[in-house]
Length: 400
Image (cartoon, rainbow, N blue to C red; front, side, top):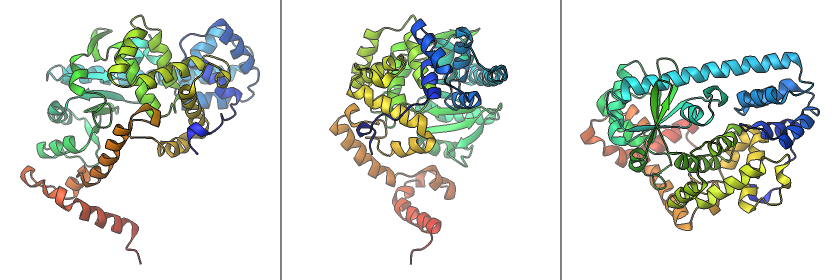
């Protein structure tokens, strides 16, 4: 059943409370509802587990301390504090790895780049990097600079992670860059770094060169980071988080944090959304965000059809877990859009055609199993269908 056609799932007090606490500031009206919901919770260890699982634990802890919730068990407060400290420590390690990458590689090599999501977003919009849980570093680099960056990284003890088995020689890295839209390496400190050539699936929505040219410098501590302008980032967050059907609560907090920033301008956001043909997506996200500031957002009569679709998808994902998220993703209109109303018939048709051509496109696994010099790599296109068939037969067994 599609998300659009289903009723709102029932929401337990723990999830209701987490929805309210997933923001930087809590109003007086919201505080009253928070106290009411806290009185209904009798399994605080489960509350802590869910806050951590949904990546909002540091924000939840800070808000609960500010509100001075009554009846919160002392041992749970201690546990919550310990988990927050662990999150802060990890965020600081990620931030240090990001700074090292910039200072030791990106700047010396004069590589145009920008950081998005993760610690860069936390530092600029949350005020305290430890308030937003981060798992990795996302870096946008153009294809023409990516091979030289990878060579320099692998020479400095960064380890290849994806594609699996990626070699460090120039021919191998060049093939990987042309066949893999995202390459993941692990820093010497054990931090995953995702190297993106574009921030959408096929570069039709966002132009990498334009993004790099319009990047801003954000001063952070004694250094600076190249990041998206606030309006551009907000539109991208709406686009990206909707694609994943709002399956994590810290994405809702991202909308709150960016809108509270002094540089946020709704007119600029709407103009940016129009340039990328994402106006309906952004307006739905704004509706969704404002509804979630209510104690029971599903009772908000001002929530439109598209905002309702986002709220339904969010609640289904949060209560169903990873399996539900993966099942719902199969219904996505295109690789970039979860819902048909976000896009056009022409875009969906182009994506359908591309889905068939991708089957013929060589992958890095082709190179790994049969490494060919650059001048002979056209053979991968010729042999790809047969190699795919052999691989499938060897994996599933020869049918009788």
